[in-house]
Length: 307
Image (cartoon, rainbow, N blue to C red; front, side, top):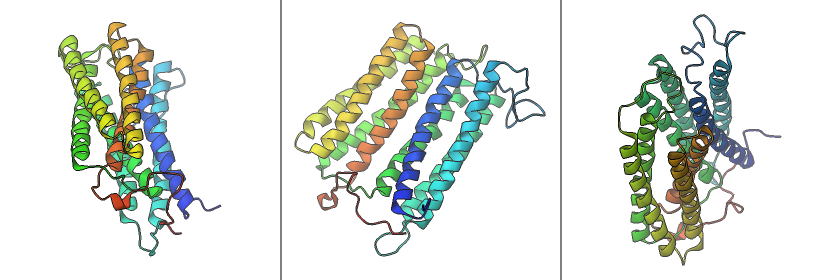
């Protein structure tokens, strides 16, 4: 079986990259809510003189170390994806440069993510650095979604210019909502380790600003559902985003009023990862004004990738 040299292999590696990068957002959240962020006291070693936890180390060290090991899984998957992308060709036998570029960007993002994560340990979980650690993860999810679309050779769906403008506005406010969510996290009690500093902002006020941004996002998405009622492919993508938004909003309000229980905070990280993926999917599908390129089903990819 060809592991990297066929269209099927490229699609499988692209999906594996997406799943892996979604998963590490959730496991990173688990590290924080279990107060395991400083389970390993330094980086790149776990403890001075050792890359692995000492035998008598507590559970926090193994949770943090386990999350670090997942980075190697991401690297292995990213290398497999890059090899498959490097061998991908279009129908004319020309290398698929966008596919290669996305695969390279994924590897670069993983490296950046690891470095920022290490710096966050070295600065004792400074909330701004910890927040910055999420940014490469968001970018990686977006890159992986785009790579999946390219691997399946999925083309844009036809939408009008007003819909594209609303989608771009939605992307802007969606990104703002996630960034404000990072600020809220930095003001809240889940610091990642006992005694780690907070950003000093008022939790209630920052949460209100964040929630207002979220409701702008929801309103824009509902408007898109109505605007795309005659376009089944675009409407499905919008409804998917709306479903994730409503789930995320429900979890967000629940965790706020229930004093941020760890399991709800983790569920909120799941929502963040899914929102990023579904929003990237919507943007990619509606990015082009040319209806002649419309192909709407993943199940029928064109034979545009040759070994």
